[in-house]
Image (cartoon, rainbow, N blue to C red; front, side):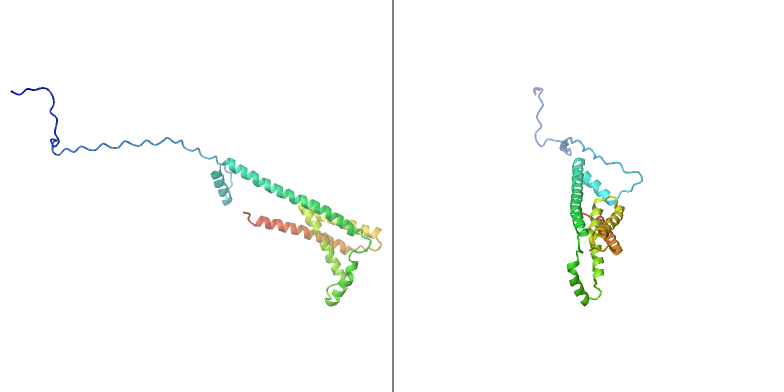
Length: 219
């Protein structure tokens, strides 16, 4: 007679029922670290009716990449450099105008013509080159005489239409002083025309330089 002790008989290896496959346990999912999303960069609202240009797109991309604070610092630094450069040009032009005014007065009130010593040389050149005469040389010299005045006033004045009246008043005053006080100096209407022409040439030189600077792209 067999005694039942109530304990289960262990299943030996190889006693599993045929045809049953135990699937492997699936791996646990990897929990990703919680990273808060980066807040979007503030973008200024576009102007109503304005179409974005290529330069505006580049500026917006640079502003988004560098951040608002870095972009503001760069803009302020660029503005300061331009302001300092403009202020330096105006200061240099002011000192140059003061030196030119002193030279202008000295030449205007000189007792004798300033080109008196050069006349023999001009006559010698005129004998070789007939178009070169003392009158033409004086006319060209009077034009060059007032070119700095027009250029310097163009750098200093915001209302550049005043340059021609200033040149007219200046040259008429010079010719009047020479006619009233200097016997060896001969006033001439051609001198007035040449001087005003020189001031206009100086103004055009500055205008042309500024136009070329605006036309040329900067780095």
